[in-house]
Image (cartoon, rainbow, N blue to C red; front, side, top):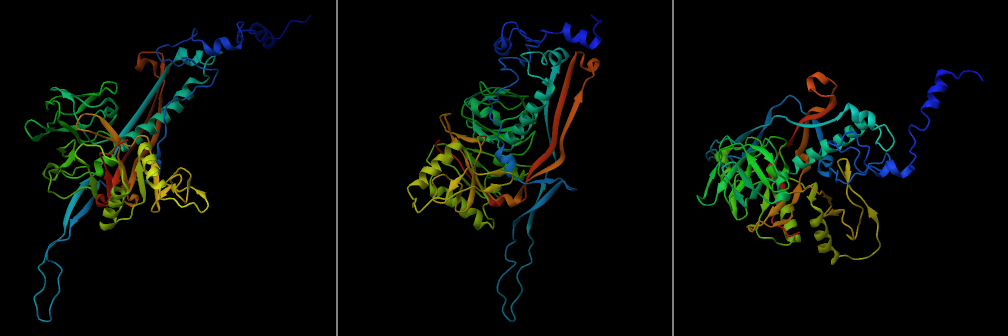
Length: 444
């Protein structure tokens, strides 16, 4: 017999190398051959199928228009018409008093959001073997992209002020599920319930967030205690819609907060200054049921301020509450299923009788799982807030679209690893804060 070629020899020598003598299910369901247990990339994989058990929906991010940043570092907000500048004038009467509008300057610069991932050289090789997940770098890149957009969505929907249940010089504690509303780099202010005063020191910047215990660590400065209010003074990441739809001296947990958006620091956002939100409805930290009156009032206030509501944003709990409210008013004269587009998102399928909601008074309803919730005075987490928004004045301004950077410099990393980075530079802009509205302190 003729000698085999090199190709034939290699094919014969590797026969069985990628076949399991224990049957097809062994490598697929076990984790004995994990090459990099630290990353857990092989943990309980099922062949090459990796099940995603996380909520990666980003409805609010998809619903808001995106624009190029442009050559601007801010804009102006007209907050006052001037007094006495307009009135009837008789034939020989004097002219109205000359006055000017009150113009506030809003400074807004882009924020950077980064997402990293990596894999060891050994795991990159081993992932190609039987029972692995295939191209581990491609898999992690795909997951990182989902995580990156999810982080942006969570920042856009981060809550602004919460009651603390404990505190110290460098920490304060909020309900664990609310801790995600604080991000590393955020500067927080405090309402001291014992001194009935506000305090914000330059060192009160969040350095760590524990989403399991609810403990937020700040660098130094303000001493928190049970019953104090911790609120956002400036964001390390993107400004959230809750920062924007906020009153001066807003009531939180039956106390007050001075949440800032952008650089709006007139008298440190004390009560009585110009209101940076159209209509914010609280209930002193006591839960209440969502009613059509509350929703109608939010819509009315926006229209009174010259806007037109384009979107109702709420959590899934309030979505079903609103559906139950409208169910008793249905008149069944045939059903026609339809959906409404909001940005690149669409509402849930609805019927014109309101059996499954799609709109209310012609305004699209969009539920998002990341919608922030309120907290009661006893530290109990209440239901999600409801936001009624005029999206004509909202935009996500993008200074730099999402960039991908990959690094294979083993000497710089001092390890045999491949690292990847996704980063985006942008900010949520609101050109008219008076035509946005919020309903808080709602039961789930």
